[in-house]
Image (tube, helix red, strand yellow):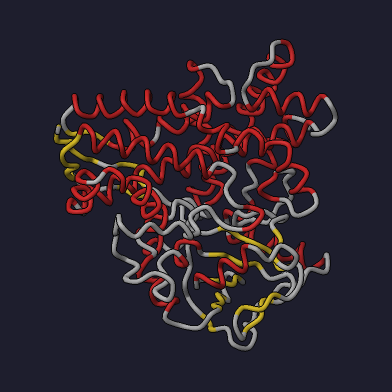
Length: 433
């Protein structure tokens, strides 16, 4: 893949404007794709829009309204179906024959040779090449490094009085973990974080000047990351290590991965491996700052740490929703998503479904909801789930051992990304134990 093509694919930005959306629809129509503008029987029209400013600020009131309604919802303006109930979202995430990921899981339609955006049998081939690096046993080897990083971050927050939990802990820790897993030198960690932040903007769909800025950031970061990774690949060919990236380079040299797939694998691991865990750590700290009684429960009984992490994943849902395209008609209750329809699986809504979880808006560290959809379901179940759980548990254990209370020190600031929702700032004060 040329640098130009890598950048263009990574920064697909045509969906970032209404005019661009119309151009995409015209191209799809001319190619014979079926664009659905009317709901099928059983679906209900909705004005819910994940890109509405109020929804981005707090989607849960809208989720509650949709959960109280029919199984399937349709936004005519977006030409988009929403699946919200737990059972329906779980079934849709596993309906690999009818709901395809191959046109991307982000708002825009694009074909990218990445495991996350592939269907069987390509997905099976790609996942097999990297799964061995993310088994429970393999990931456990990262625990000492995570413990060291968590200890340093909590110590810095304790020493500084009021601090930003995102800037000092939730943001830097995951990128350092995944960068080490990829064999990236520590001196390059800050650049990796910056590139990752900007590439994740591709999951948003802003308008006007903001869209132009986002597109420039995405393209620039893709170019820099592509150039950097090509250098890394060459370095690892000369001197391979025991990291994930060395294994992928060897697979490429043996013909199991194309050069394109090698690049996108590395990009996927970088972005997916740190942004979602950053959101988990940030929203978990916020939950405990807002619910000191729950934090006290975990301090009294540290055996609740794993359960509390699962509840944080359910309650905060670092990935609020991902997109699919209907490869054939897909039933949802009494309604049907027609072939060609664009679908948003709302994991964030499903994780608050009162049919599945009692009092779902309550954060309860004793709930232990191990069946939550915070990591998705089916063949696209999060490859890094074990690693994210380790990072969450290690950070929480470090906090309960050394911190008596997590106190709010200002208003939290949420990012404006409706798909990968998390905090961009969390002012807190850690009270030493």
